Length: 368
Ligand code: SF4
Image (cartoon, rainbow, N blue to C red; front, side, top):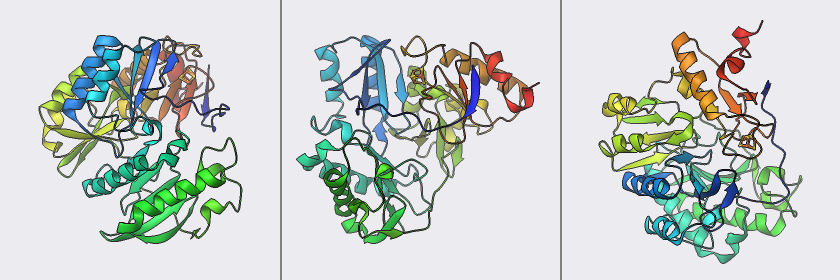
């Protein structure tokens, strides 16, 4: 077991991003990933998905670092009733493009959602763009630079209602909001045309790539990830260990019709600040000082064949111990092997920890 700073993961040789129509078979069964462009989703859809998950697999929705949802522990092959049930939620508008609909948007900027919908529709309307790598990530950002903390490939950052910047590879150019979708997709098409074989992301392009032609260096404007807690009348509700459970969703249904899934293990509940206490009682995290807002984990054993240890129960025990101590910690990520899935820059990563004490003993203040 070790605690180490984050390093870039080793990339496998092929893009194996799962979808509903191409599930990944993990140690605990089939896993499907459902894309939520812009993150917005009806609470009724979450309830339908949880019912399907409970009927066919693990009764939980796992939030991903790109604002998507995963259902796991499913039979392989997937039962037709499960696939039809997911399709009935409306989350699979395109069979050909399901794995490329990876679009992050600023979670606190509902005014950007129409642009996200236009981008998603135009993406799905171009047959060629179905060939994008599943790891290619679009972003639609607000003027503060949220969510450009995430490793996007091409983005539009709105600076006003009418204009903004097209961004890719640390470069950019001004673009009007009416031209933003076309400009973003032109970069994606250039990527398909010019990226060397095996390159999945703009950041891995060789220097001087024509994909970035016409773009100039621009100073970065990046907002930090949202922390749990009220933001005006809205609420950022953290989801412990990124596992959204039936009790959470039942409580959300009492206060909101729609929520926004963020890339940071949380949901934005618009108008939800007044309901923070009720949502906290249901197990969601509304206090940024809570250890649950700082501790994360990969799925570990028994869900992942590569895992040397269970991670979710260990991480839950770490959260309980840290809350009992009341001491602040750096972001801490518990993983079951050296692949370090889900680790973010700046995380302390505990690899293969057999129990919470082993993790806690490696935190800076606990080292002998
Ligand atoms: S870090 Fe290792 S154990 Fe955890 S999900 Fe990734 S491959 Fe599995």
